[in-house]
Length: 305
Ligand code: URA
Image 1 (cartoon, rainbow, N blue to C red):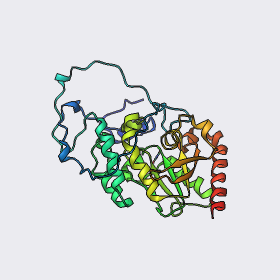
Image 2 (image 1 turned 90 degrees about the vertical axis):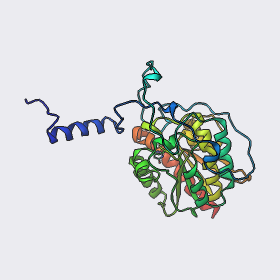
Image 3 (image 1 turned 45 degrees about the horizontal axis):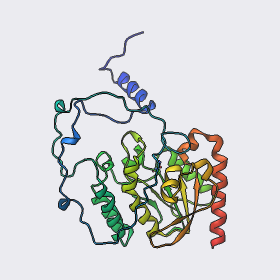
Image 4 (image 1 turned 30 degrees about the horizontal axis):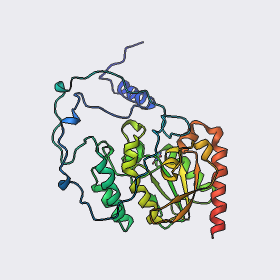
């Protein structure tokens, strides 16, 4: 048997295929970057803050779990604990808008921006200009939505993965293909449904978004739901259900039971929490549960006319 060579294209291709199948999809730079040394832009240089009513904070969230039915993410190894001498890390090159530890002001700013958007396009523009969520700086694209904004059915997932980040569209990877089949099973597709996520930027390495990141992004998805004003909402997975249905219950208890999502203006939208397609890919025996939930949605939409 001959040893693999770093110069042989076949060996390189095999190594890359091995990495890809092991879930390695991020290329890191050789030298570490001290993000804390980057200069945070002054408030005046950030996205403009239009005057808008400030809504009450709902800060009763628990940190999302890492795997299992609650999460759409594959389990990942926890961050290694190591100590780092920050003075040895070279400063990052200056960027126009940079990552920093987000403060509570960003939640407030997100609320004001979201409330001031009177159309989906305005909302998309506000989100694209918003620098208050650090996930934006590692993501390639804003993943705003896909589908028909006039549809009577809206589905909300957790956060984009690698494929969604590359294309700038939600649910276009493996779980998206399963979601398309689930929609087809109730006679729908992306022309008769509207799809978005709680978090519009891909968390690096598909990690679970932090509660603070979720709080920063929540006003945007809440406003998006309000502007679409669907007859029925489907919450795909625990994080979407917990964020938008004001509950801490687990998805296996929540799923299959009608809940209500209440918009800022007080509209009550019937919501069906169900299992996330990524979870169903890992746990196919539970597909029958999601199938039942989708049939419930079909019947409710028919009853609503
Ligand atoms: N999982 C999600 O929750 N959203 C996507 O867009 C893709 C995968």
